[in-house]
Image (cartoon, rainbow, N blue to C red; front, side, top):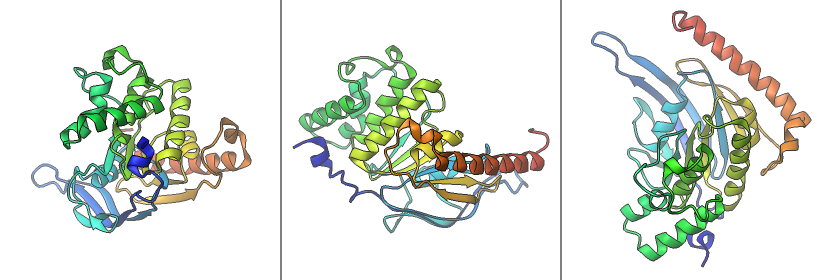
Length: 278
């Protein structure tokens, strides 16, 4: 039985995410109302859909991701995954961060299997699954390397392998390729779409890069300046996976112009609201 057969990665097991009237306020100092990061957010993400999220710094993108992950709870409203309210973390929701998420004292293999071992998966099973995932992300032969011996792109490949090895229903990605050079970023975007084709998780993808958002996503959201709401929502109709020539297509060019304008408008709004920080 292959990893894909074992994990049932046909898309039938991907998770549906629903935000129902979600607001998130962070406490401030005594006497302060705090910070309203999200305000009455209503959003539905279909199973196996890739949704990319753009917006100015501080607009609530990471707050939304943390709520889906179960790291935090909303101040008002609720997050549902497959109809069940999220109150805590769960292996069905895996996360890939921008950097710093690998344990430097563990090898590539041990970083990859850490979650499986903590869940009591037997050694034969987790070894097979990890080796298959590491092969998929192009890291066969690097199992015994440590993070410091890897490039930034290779470290992100390990993070993705670690996230997917548990066959999660939802993959949360917080600017996963933001620290990489241009060419490596392109390679990682293409790898993500190849892996999505095989595993079909639902993906919530935060980025500041409009080109990246259009290239990887089925739908792109632009968040308003704080408090965060969805100010624009556009579908990307070209089927995935996409080749680089998509970047010169009429659809891409039209979407890029529309999204750049929307993001710039929200950045200006954020600066106007906080002139000191600008």
